[in-house]
Each structure stands twice: as structure tokens, then as C-alpha cells.
Length: 279
Image (cartoon, rainbow, N blue to C red; front, side, top):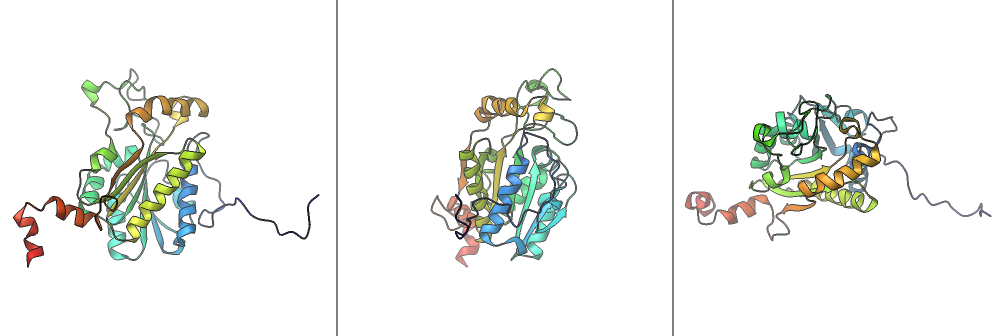
């Protein structure tokens, strides 16, 4: 029998930063999970009112309707450029972009590389589902060797189309990067890890450490032509060996105050790189 005088305890509810609207994601897609995690982090850090998100073209294009914070829509691949401008004009705000692999690693690769190299103090949430999602299932830069897509009906031929681009590994060599981690959201344990990574990435930005990116290995049941359950199994069997989870760069854990300090230490034997500090 329920004690009517006992105060009920809320253990699970919609984050305040996530608006009560219906999303457009397909069954079995983890975009919705990641959207919620971002909103939970905004609530926990109490930054909804000072956060500005950038949503480019792709499955994330309508995410401006899902969050209570300010949102800007960018052209395909140009989210890093827009986020750079926003952060420089509003340095005290938290700025994040939410991008897919076709957007970030293909048409937007130039913007991605140079924003990271400049050490822009933005946070990128990068969804890697190895395919172009919204535009019909074409081969993406992250599509796996022999993976069948709408534009590789016989499988990705690496001799003609090249090999997949591993974004975390690629960006880890750039001096402006402060924090990189690859996660997924296929189980409660991994969802918790994904949230922790998103929170750390945003805190990295808030503390002025440098550029931060969280890559989420995800599913795309519709364009993979699978059921939700089959897509998770395929992701674990094929994507996770190719895109290993883990932290790829964390300058603070390496003993540096920020990305700039780490870069200076790496350039200690380069006189011209040290000359300004000697003045």
C-alpha cells in the first residue's frame, strides 16, 4: 500500500534543456539518445541559458527544434566556421556543433581540420554511422571497406575510393586539440560513458583548454537496411574494431594546463616557436 504522506521521488524525467517535441529520428537510431545526453549535461552544468548550438545539414538539421538553448543552422559542412565566429563574438558562451560523418568528414573536412588546428575553444559532437543518413545512404568518408551503400552497390573498393577516415586519430596530431574521445551508445554502460565524455568536452571548453570533440559510433538501421537489433550487432562486429573506443587525446591528463602549453612543450627545440615567450 502506498503511503500518501510520503513525498514521491523523481528518478527519471525529461531534461529541462530538451524541449517536449517529437523528434524525426528513425527507430534504432542513437541520435535521440545523444540529444538527451547533451541536454542532461546542459542541465547539470546549468548552462542552457548561455549555450549556443550549431546544426548543419544532415539528420541533425532539425535539432534546433529540440533544445531550449539558442541554435543556429549552418550550411552543409560549415558548422565549424559558424561556431568559430559565434565563439569569438561571444567568448563567454558555450558553443557546440552537432555533426554527422558526411558533414564533418567530407564536405566539412577543411573547416574541421582548421578549427582544430587553430585550437578554437568549441565542442564538437560527431556522429559516425559510416554512411550519409539524411540524403539517402551514400558512401561516406567513414564507410568501411566492402560496405554496401547506395553509391557503392558492390561494396567500398578501397583501391578506387580509398580507406575510411578515422577522425579521432587524424585530429589527435593537431596542436590545438585539447580533448578527443570516441564512445558509443549501444548499452547502459556505454551511454553513461558517452555522457561523461560529452560533459568533459564541454568543461574543457568552459575552462579554455582548447578544441574538444566527442565521436559517437552510431547506427543507421534505415540506410543499412537492417532492423534496429541487427544494426547494433553489425556495429559491434564491424564498426567498433575499425573505430576503437577510448580517449585519443587529453592534454590535462598529460600534465599540461591547456592545448597551447602542450604545443609549446612539443616545440621546445624550435627557436622561432619559443621566441615570443622569451621577449
